[in-house]
Amino acid sequence: MYFRFCSALVLVVIISLAGAATEKRQLELRRLLSHQHYQLDVLVERQAALRVEAQRLGAPLRLLETLDQAQKAAAEAQPVAAPKSKSKAKTKRR
Image (cartoon, rainbow, N blue to C red):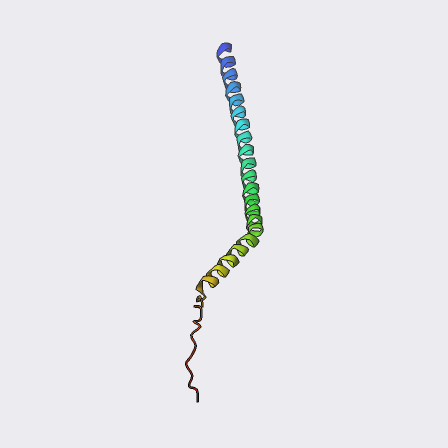
């Protein structure tokens, strides 16, 4: 009977130790997941800031390109003046 009591006690201790180990592992995984979520938020904010900066830095170049294209389009849209003929008008002499 003493053997049954000791084996039951050992079994309860082993189960409680296993439960404590699984809770510890679960807490560790939750911390890791929380840290990864934090890193993801930081990276998303950094990506947004870098995207805004890239757009800001690229804006003058795009503006110049559009101005150049507008000037080219305006130059092409202007009618080419035909050379004036040098015909002498006949005038009546008296």
